[in-house]
Length: 150
Image 1 (cartoon, rainbow, N blue to C red):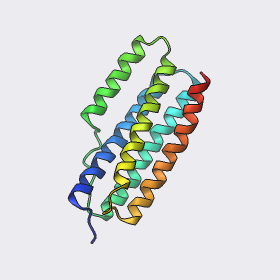
Image 2: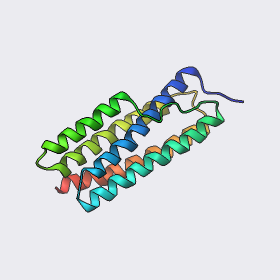
Image 3: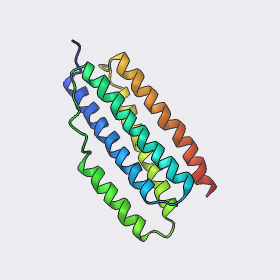
């Protein structure tokens, strides 16, 4: 059975942890807005990240890597707490949440790009990561245009 290299396994686990953080972060953003479009957007993005994690877990199990990150990271928990505080004191809560989402999506793209440079990445895993990255890029273009209209 083919396995990921140790450095690649570590990077993939980090990515999975950030995807789990993203799921929770988008859920938190949805909970903090009454704006119908943004609520639906954040809920959809939370579900998307949930699906991304499941797809990756299936892929990883084929290569002997198992998810031990379902709780998310400490940094992610701190970020979600910051979102709570910001929502409490922000005059324009929707704009604030939108900016956080854009920042998070840009960071996610950096994570994907970094892993996609790994030469030891199996083609099957690369194809899955490219598909997920493309979905993030497409949504980022849309949500950035929406922010520009505000």
